[in-house]
Image (cartoon, rainbow, N blue to C red; front, side, top):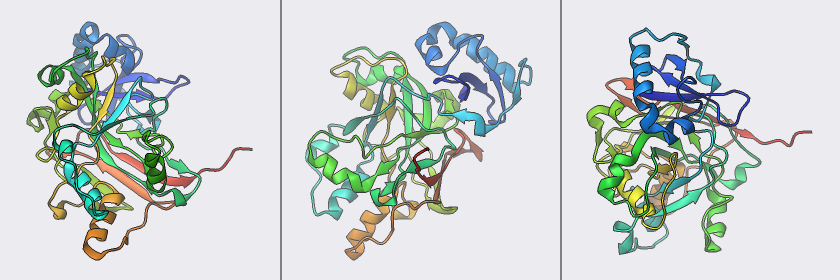
Length: 329
């Protein structure tokens, strides 16, 4: 199944079921008002949502309409919890190497994760709005999963069955604010502004054989200012599967339905695959030449993040432009 959320007057929008082509949609309000509602009652509503999805794909759903992606917000416009990992250790290795530091051995066994702000997410076509370019605006192309209720102490094997949905992420970062913030020892806050998500969240079965062992085995395609920037494969070099990331957090707490778990910036050792963020390209430049050459994002810059299978877009594209924030009034 493929889901989206239509903007309306509310904070959580209206749940839509979307066809596989991403062109037609139907409101699912007779089954669940919002995606969060559906996730909290998944066992109750799954079969009815599947029947609606089947009818839509067969051209038989009453009330179906042409989808306007400009009217979509994030599949979950807000969430009770957003946890982002760093499961692609090539990215971590490059960052460390650029500053002459080794990767601690524990990083290969114990996942890196942080808890981000989840009260307000950006839609797939929303602008990235900030006051100044001096903060070092960067995109980070990732994958995320959305969980069912996850009990305290859930194991990796059990966690795989708790994954309800998969979607794409642009985890916007303000790179020049990160060092001083991390130096305080309390983690990210102001350096991690609102995150954006793809138009569609899909059930893992929509990925077919690309969904294996809690990983997505497909390239993630990134364009920056209309040019190719990277298409690393999200599967083979993911050190910690989504199930492992979920189990890591559930070690000390239960997770509520609708918790979002991010993969971290996708990265491959093969440099021909490009990168999924400007910071990684800069780290490679630093390692190779001793200096940074690529600037961070400027006002007017654009980024596009998408994943295709058999020539078809699975999640729809995140397409964002950086704009300058101006105080109203």
